[in-house]
Image 1: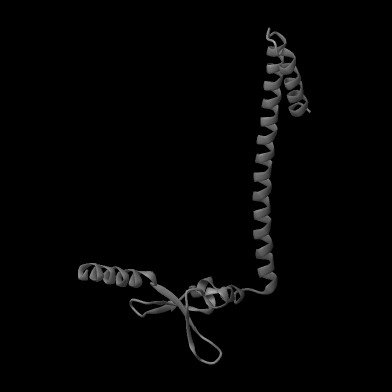
Image 2: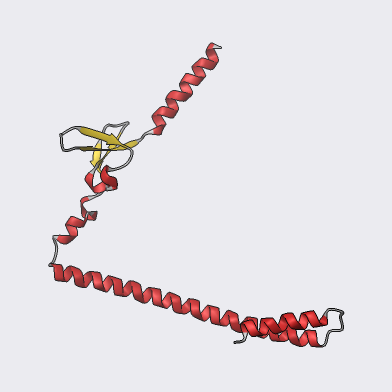
Length: 147
């Protein structure tokens, strides 16, 4: 019994220490330190990251990645120009991808049309009981894919 209790206590203490490695912390408007598993207002730039085991505190987001660092360099017009160029490049990439998809869809439709015509030709020469059903099915496929 004592052995089971000892193993249970050991397992719980190990799992508790592994559970929380890092937490977010910040000071609120009253100066009180707050600790949480999610950043303040769900914005990591407003919080610090604290390692529970070593008690070290680092910034959750490096200073170079914050939006304020980008606004300091260049005027608003330059930033707008850079943003417009990025959006234009993204739009070109999307258009190229859409064109590839359209080409692939067109090729697939042509292949389906060709297969439907071949199936119709094969069904015309077939000597089976349900030849009429095959012909009707392949005629519907031709109308679907060849228009």
